[in-house]
Length: 118
Length: 110
Image 1 (cartoon, chains in turn orange, yellow):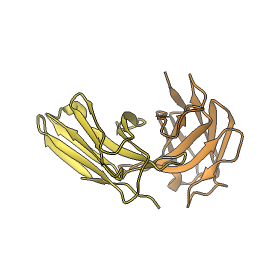
Image 2 (cartoon, chains in turn brown, purple):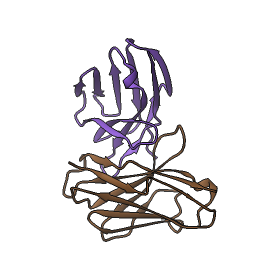
Image 3 (spheres, rainbow over the protein chains, first blue to last red):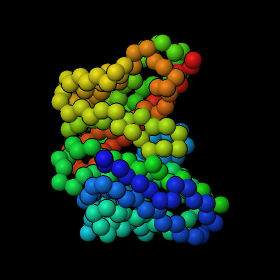
């Protein structure tokens, strides 16, 4: 149980285009999902916390108008990279926490989406 | 800003050797998790520790949470090539998010 999927698994796009990445909890409901970015050989950096039915909370230094997050249902959060540029190329990973769980509840990670902007 | 520093950053050892990875912070965490990540994949949870001084074992892996809940360690006994990967600690500060450590890249040579 507790499977999180991401789609697409990889995407190549031209500079200036927008890219949407989906994060789905397949067998549980998640009121909270997290979006991370990971550059090569580095750790995960939290970008934003996505809450179902409300606005996402962005970490300092993350442009909310560039990285649009929508958490429209208890099983789906989307991250849209708008007007992507080569420096946005990275590995984007989402995680989900089971709804109603304690603060220490495990977060389950998706397999990640590799974005390459040409 | 809460930071989690891991040491060492890189570790290359021979199969059969023991190793310890450290995760340190000046902040107190309500819980701490350890993950292993393979290239091109998401992190996979190894363990969660929540009590100061807690020790958990997972086969050849031993995890310890510091008494003050500011640090943790991961000890691997008789490392195997399959242990190769990026090891990440992540601290839960009591709010609904986790802070990831800087990571330790382990390579076990056959």
